[in-house]
Image 1 (cartoon, helix red, strand yellow):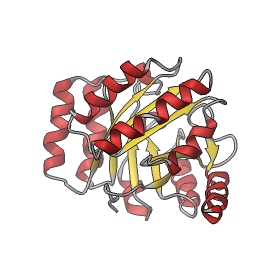
Image 2 (tube, one colour):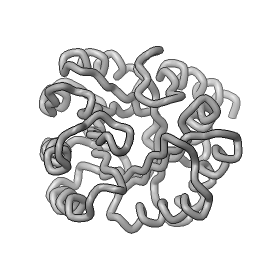
Image 3 (cartoon, helix red, strand yellow):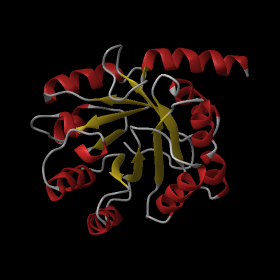
Image 4 (spheres, rainbow, N blue to C red):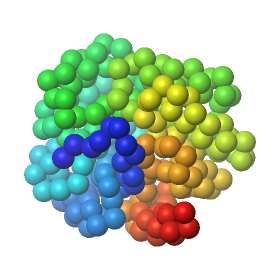
Length: 236
């Protein structure tokens, strides 16, 4: 199932497990609250694509995060990208590719995507140590807009409220350029941004399938996000 790139996608539930069967069970249970389900291929000991595309009804995002960007994939870059290309060939809704990925591998992905227009490409950038300056964040966003991405993703770690404001402010530039952007902060201080981004033009926020199943610091269970958004929407 594809997603609409022209309007926000809502809540993405991130699923990271060692076994395919366990990940599939959690994903199926999460479909009641999720708008999109992210399958973290880097967490699977024997990653597969077909069990998820054949058994889940919600739009699927496949991510294969390398160790050098906070993920668990330890293999070669060619092997890492090969799994994402397989997901594209199954016409999944979205794939996530890091901005720091080698240009030739990104070009290979873009070539395959031309034959599979149903799949959208997220070009992502994560900082697990802090939040850089506004100038550098603006440059990262510009690189994403020029990369061939359908959607950008910039996620940092907030040390104070000013970090949160700098990241959320990126939505202004993204909106001026009609560029869908996922932007929020990790960590306890950044938790508010995971909710606020949905009301400030953010394309998507990420939640955990349940308490204790977080795939990133500060991730909130999807059921809690859904309840809070419902209350905010009723307050409008």
